[in-house]
Image (cartoon, rainbow, N blue to C red; front, side, top):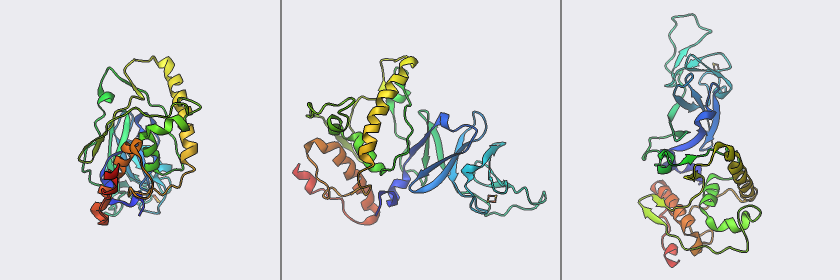
Length: 279
Ligand code: FES
């Protein structure tokens, strides 16, 4: 079973675009292996999201455009409002009823922290609280928007894995001569994991002139990760016994435990806790 096939994961919010990236044109995005489209209903309007497939002849709605707050299909010009309902079929004479099935499947969509968040199911939790993102003392620098041919959980694990920095990032911010980690704590509260690192939310108020420099360093760092990640088998073993874990892997191990617990809701496979106790 792929991670993207675990039903519970569909019940959380995920960021899919920067708010500034959704302007007057529809924006395609892919989540859980399914194509979707986001669009903004006019200047300064709200962002909406839906399955990227017209119910008429399956054209990609992301290849269309926005007019009068509606998403217009590029194939025959059908217009869909923010709820996904078709409100106009140009080829038909005015007044002819629009079929009830002329409806594109909308998904939940909200903007927060300068990001567009979506949930393809019924959310069981809110958009994550990012305290620093709403603290005026901090500046959030939106740096990178990349498409990678790697599995999402492997990318997340790398972001949570501090011990790889000395090796993968040895040509930028890391040093193979200094591979040892200082101790850190990982706290679990239900399905939430707390692990603090300082990185891209800054309280030193860097001027916009140096944002490019900051982004440039992170770009180089992320390129190092990219090369490595795109070479790894995208199959991500959710149980903790397939790959080997040590003391320095406590954060990423806890992440797998959370995934395993969510997956066990529907697979019936109990999350493996026994091996983890031996660390
Ligand atoms: S395929 Fe979209 S209007 Fe025909």
